[in-house]
Image 1 (cartoon, rainbow, N blue to C red):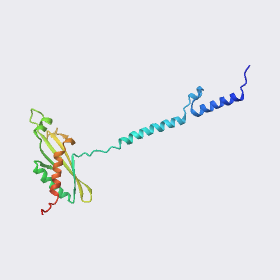
Image 2: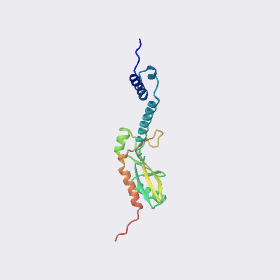
Image 3: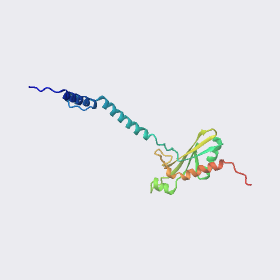
Image 4: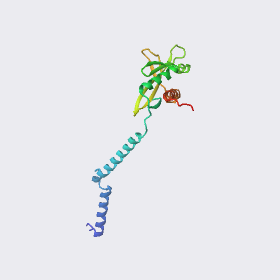
Length: 187
């Protein structure tokens, strides 16, 4: 014979089933096989938020400029700047190799580090400059420097000079700025 449930037992079982359905906890196997749509949406939102966080966190860093040294010059024309650049670089042993491209033989240390030690392979220094307008009568002169192996041959190799070696090139550009500034009269 089957025992009849009391009203209080019925209320307790109903409350337990309602709580199970609301929280996704279920003791019934047919409910365990179903996916909870709100849980899937919450998980997808969390994964998407983390993805966006990593994506935009990587974009927050500033890009380094690709030039080795630079100066800003105001109040001169590109022609005047070019003349000053050519004068400063030729006075420092460079030869004009193209439009704002200068070359000179590398040092013994350049040859030791980048040439072959016993052969006659020369290493050259090539400097490429750009004059970039950045405002009203304001220009930035950008300098990129390279070591050249096998200059003029079909297998010419160009090695970019690292930013830690920027000082000599920055000094040349500072000399260009000094040449363009008007001389102050002495009192």
